[in-house]
Image (cartoon, rainbow, N blue to C red; front, side):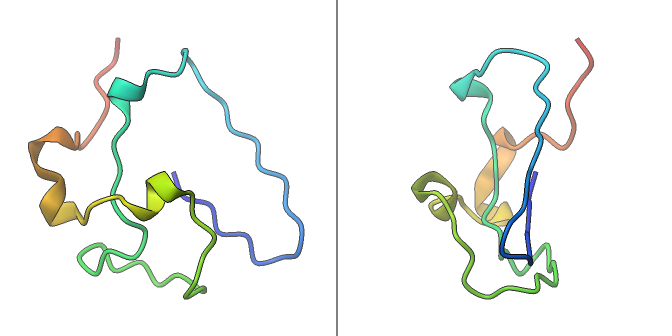
Amino acid sequence: HGVCALSEEADVVYKCTDFYAPSGERGVIWDDPTIAIDWPVSDPLLSEKDARLPRLAEAGQELPLFSAPR
């Protein structure tokens, strides 16, 4: 999930379907050139954890392409 708010103020509502499980976290860096999202920002506010995410090519097999139904 990525959120890019262009206003001075924004409310974000995020629905979770289960308890937080750090072992299930995956991600790629927001500005990965392989994904090539045309973000309207150049210096976003990121958490330290998100700022350290790998590029897609470096994520390896640990990054699932989809979530299987439970």
